[in-house]
Image 1: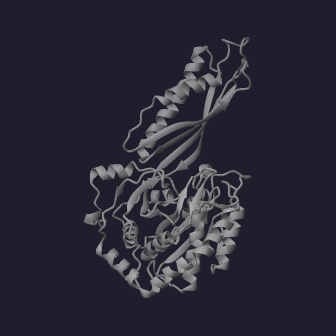
Image 2: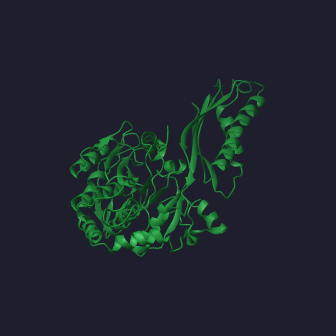
Length: 451
């Protein structure tokens, strides 16, 4: 029977809000404040942490490392990392990890950079990660510009800041000879953005069956804790027919574009539940050869998302049926059967939810309180979707800094006092894995999964 702190029981309306939450970034609103109380076990561990001279010295080291960490941020940002082309940044991140003491770190077959900082033994294994890829294509100007007290460059916040924070943590932990109880699996992963399809995280959890939890870093406001993974399916749909002259072949052949238009109209009329929030969009369209040609081909891409897998699958079924019906109607319109449509799944992100009363959420809540922040539970589609879908506790928290312009060429970050966020999230991590001689590990060890 799971632990349930009375302070973390969510009323039905709050739970509904949680399930409707969207996105990790600042433009997506938080859903509800989490009550301040946590279990006595969690509270005691964090009281011990914050009272420890060793930990206070460590936090001072995070602050002192800030300027050097910003140099890592600039260096990594200026190495472009489009989806599926992250290898140059991965190599630079790996070199920094090795220089900071993880000499056995490596790049795996999927392109993830992975290093293991061993604990004292018999503790949990916690994955701490940030993603290497950005949404920007090769050739984008990623030179960092400083103006108005901010650093400007595509990808500098999402998620290069997270990578720089991981390196800072590694440095200060090693410099201060901090021995954790549990293992820290430090990862710069690929495939978080666009059609990367979470391939990096999927490979990590496929190949490492003994991970007990995950804390990911993404640009987030202070106190934000992502606990909900929004699932998504994406389809590429292709319509094909014989085509012909717009005048000479009229009445003899169906139009692929007309069929796609019928399909889009039918899709637009589909109704989805507001709770759990379920959405769809035809995001791109194309096709045809000329203005005076009955189109032999047309194509569109569809995005379907939901905070509930059953609702996603129901909407997906309606959309696929709409496509089939549109083809039938266009063929019938001209009394032929020469038009067809094919669908290809190009995106598959699993979803789920880390329970608000789980140790990993309570740990983040207690750490936030120690730094003067009220915890706000959030949802979105991130690397945490993968472990959450497997029943492995996972959250996304911020690494510090005030970021804006995500996924835009105008992306920027103000790193003034950003070390405070790095301290906060590090304390969450140390509470979960424990520190030798200071506090026990809070994160429970799980039975290893089987393939």
